[in-house]
Amino acid sequence: MSVPRFWREIPQRYNLIGKKCTQCGQIYFPPRDVCPKCRRESIGKMEDYKLKGTAKIFTYTIIHIAPTEFVKQQPYIMAIVELDEGPRLTAQLVDIEPENVKIGIRVKAVFRKIKEDGSKGVIYYGYKFKPIS
Image 1 (spheres, rainbow, N blue to C red):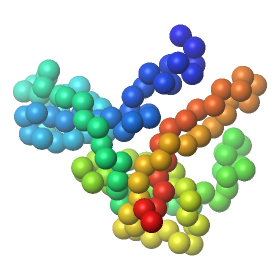
Image 2: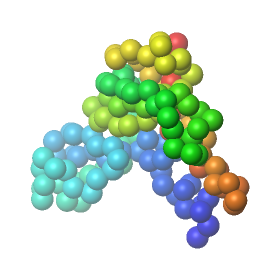
Image 3: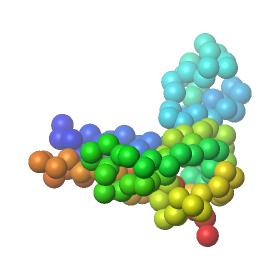
Image 4: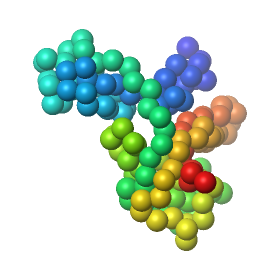
């Protein structure tokens, strides 16, 4: 399987697809096969759940000295965002200046380029978050 095809076949990378436990209603991202709360009772009872993609900034940090492949983006903002459905995830914030970032700001998921594999020219896409205007 080619690398681009492999990445396209990971639904949560492009659509924020999580799992919902039909026993307790808890939503998870990334997806899980078993609910940590219900354990055995949730086996076979986890269903796909498309998250809305809206969230608030829970906490963040500004990266001033980036790894080699991200030097052109520095400084950039990495945040833990809390989705409206409850799960928290780590993502880059875009379309906002570092001095304007505040905990609690409402954000939404956007589909953006994450990085490029130089010699092969493969471009990796995924979710990032930007402020809701």
